[in-house]
Amino acid sequence: MDLILKQDVQNLGFKDDIVSVKNGYGRNYLIPQGFASLATPSAKKVLAENLKQKAHKEQKLVDDATKIADSLKALEVKISAKAGGEKLFGSITNANIAEALAKSGHDIDKKFITSGIIKRTGKYVASVRLHRNVIVELAYEIIAEKA
Image (cartoon, rainbow, N blue to C red; front, top):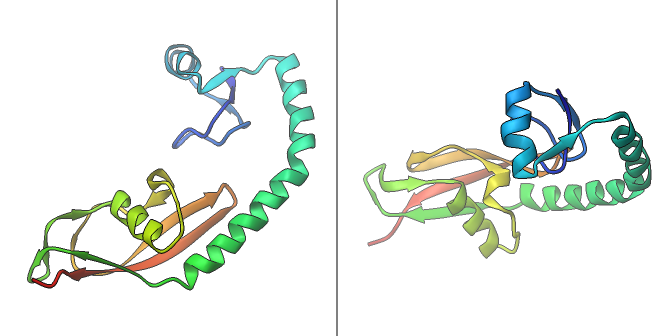
């Protein structure tokens, strides 16, 4: 079953992509949730025309994302957490990284950050997706909170 995605779907594709999925997944999940619509020949023609019109707007978005990526690369992110030795009491997740970036002036949603769950102090690297073509590696450090 061919579908046109209406929004980004994790591990499937980005908005306005034409994807092939199994019939049940498309009919029972993607279409009812509003994530996709059927890729009929007329819908494909409309999509092609819309993509032509969005091409120059897309370039501006890529340029803006590249500027943000350059500023993120220069940023030193330190997250303090309660710890006993090197082991944390709790864990550091994407939400904590997004919160640290918000404090430094970069408002990035936690769903665009990929780092995993961290349970020890030290230096780590997270992947931040600013645009489908712009992904930046963000180095950050987890330090023990002063008592």
